Length: 110
Image (cartoon, rainbow, N blue to C red):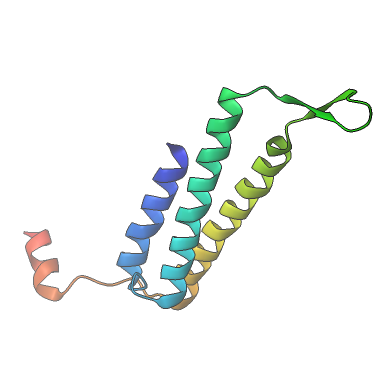
């Protein structure tokens, strides 16, 4: 839930700064969406399975290993965080905060 709040806030900020239609921002937002789906799938698999998996190599002797997804989850989470940072950089470096029109300001002051 918390990661969606951050993403939603960035989308709103992008609209406020006028970069919500910027190709770089759209690409980064799409990438983040894909990354969150991958993270959710990894978490779902880890919730349903054991943290330890077995592999059989020689003479059918089973060896115990940690589930490979345990190592993958932090990598994908880090990548998603970096994508959010890129989105924030695009907003702050390429966007300008839109100012309300004078008529809007007058209505707010009344």
